[in-house]
Image (cartoon, rainbow, N blue to C red):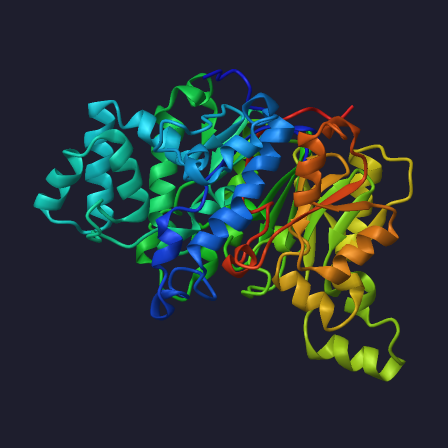
Length: 480
């Protein structure tokens, strides 16, 4: 596998390579009593989420990033006799793309080395409080079988050894590429501890990342963190990839949210500025609410001059400029602004900049960082109509993934947001139709401009993450 291409300088440059994890049996083991502990709002139907939803994500990614693996083969791949082997990393018929890279495949690779296998099994067993016999049982498994067990927690005979990690499909949160560096994250919730452990072993041991071993960054807990009172949440160090956006070559956005703490932002700023990896870091503090979770649930980028966002965070909404003066004044006294934005410059830390609202920041990024001459426009969740705005933000209307500038993937259930894309001149097409057109050679991926590709979402959206969440980009073209 070619390991010389890991480089991210934007959110919208043409996507060339990314890490994903297709839904494994973990999602079928979420039970109602544990759903919230495992960070799910509901239980999902595994067969539907695989065959009728996520498999389409895999197909469209391959068509854009690695077409030789799929073009002209869809009928054969999806035939009744194929048993979805094309999508299964533990099967000989797996697509094994080195552009659309499956985490379970990488995990099985590193487990072929007995030294790594011993360390990783011991580490997992320590985290999961396994018995010595369980540890020996795991070590006796072949690499492919062991990779499945370490993710699902279940042996081939159906015996559960430890809890599944159903959030592994949200690969955005495990790490982020910043220029040519990889920053590993520290999940906020205990349910994701094993994810972080597995991915750390992959990044430090797989040949794909061998050339980047010296550029892998980690942040640590504050000194004597274990002596601090439980209430000192801001001193905890938790960081998740949904709160990090490499927005231009020298500018990183960090969200402080339900999942990422002030102390983590503090450490990342000092680390990246000390190593001169970026020159500008903007910290966006949003309410610590499950509704928002990460900044990429509130906004993502579509084009240099187009952003999709939740209107509740617009300055007009915050100031209630359409309200009468008495209401506006009373509201401003009643609660703090729901968003606080501070921008730090590496060469002038004593004089940070402040932005009044999210729109002001995003306009500044488009005009200053991306040198955009066109008017900056916003597509609002639910077309900025209550209650559709908050309903559709909950089902990830603001969490789109750019395959390249102006061509994004979003959920088909967010009807009002789709209307807002159309109103901005975007072509809207369902992935079913697009795949038919691509397979019949009626259209080429490079011909698509300003397009929202709608993806099936009945079950996926209930897992509380969109396609931005379900991707960890490793390589994008630089924006010219």
